[in-house]
Picture 1 (cartoon, rainbow, N blue to C red):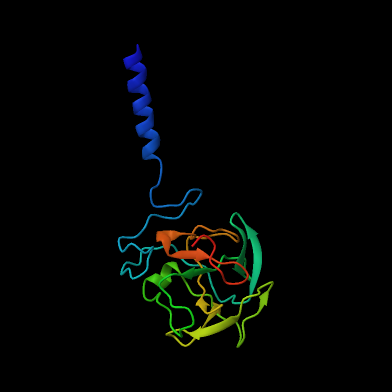
Picture 2: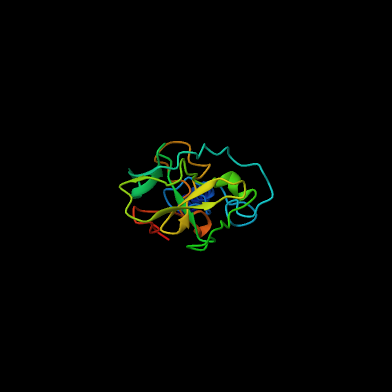
Length: 172
C-alpha cells in the first residue's frame, strides 16, 4: 500500500513540475526566452507579439503589482535595458529586438512626466524619431504587456527592468 502511495505522489509531483515555467520570474507570465537569450535582443526572427503603439511619450507614475512604476500616458509600463549604456546617445536594442521592446517615443521636443522626479530627455532613433530617456536610460515598452499596468517584461532574461519615478531599476 505504501508503495502505491509513493508512486502516486511521485507521478503527481512530475505532472506539477511539468506545469511550471523555468524562464519566468515567480508571478510573471513572460513568454519563453528566445533562442538568443535576451528575450528578443539581437534576434533575427520576427514571430513576436505585436507591440502596442508607443507614441505616448509623456510619462506618469502608476501603481502596479510591483509598486509604483513609470508608465506611458496610455498606462503601458516603461522598461530599461541592461545592455544600454546610461547617458549615451544610442540604444543597444536594434532590429528584431525593437519588435518585442518598442521605444517610448517623445510626442514633442521635451518629454513631460507627471510625478517623475528623475531627469527626462531624449536620444535619436535610427529612423529620426526621439526615444524618451529617464535619468539617462532609454525607455521601452514590452509587446507582451497587453493592458495598462501589466509588468510581464519585468526581469526577462535578467536584463529588462521596470523603473521608479527617479529612474532607478526595480529588482535589477
